[in-house]
Image (cartoon, rainbow, N blue to C red; front, side, top):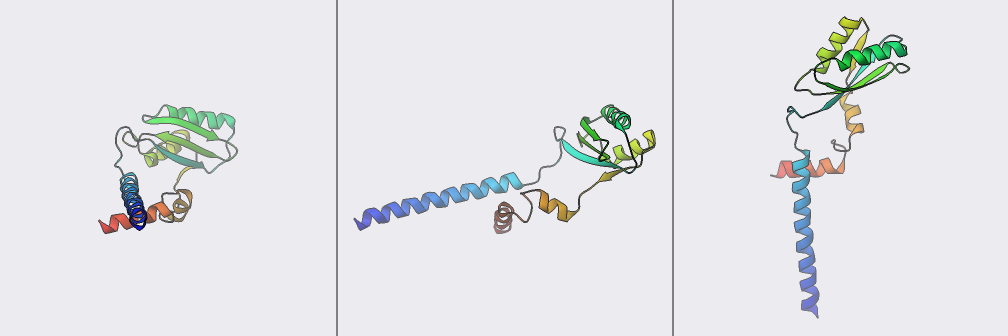
Length: 141
């Protein structure tokens, strides 16, 4: 009877250990930063530092849609924010913001969240349990 219990415990422990190793490898692979390629899509936000109305928002959105590498644009005149997705391999969001300001004469500034804001916004950042496991594996191997 004791041998049977010992065998079950040993097998259970071995399976748990193997599953833990597979999970660690999965987390390591998924958390590894990937370089931007032609299929990478990113998002950016532009804050307009002056009052705009719906016509201004439509004008900004249509201008952004004509730019190379811009995929989708949302403009909210009430909050004076423009959010757009783009291909970083084709266009730089900072350059696009500068071009928007000079072309349409709006006081536009690209919003970049602080490191503290980034840590709060994404569960894969350093405050999360997953990142702790990733960091442990990365430093161990």
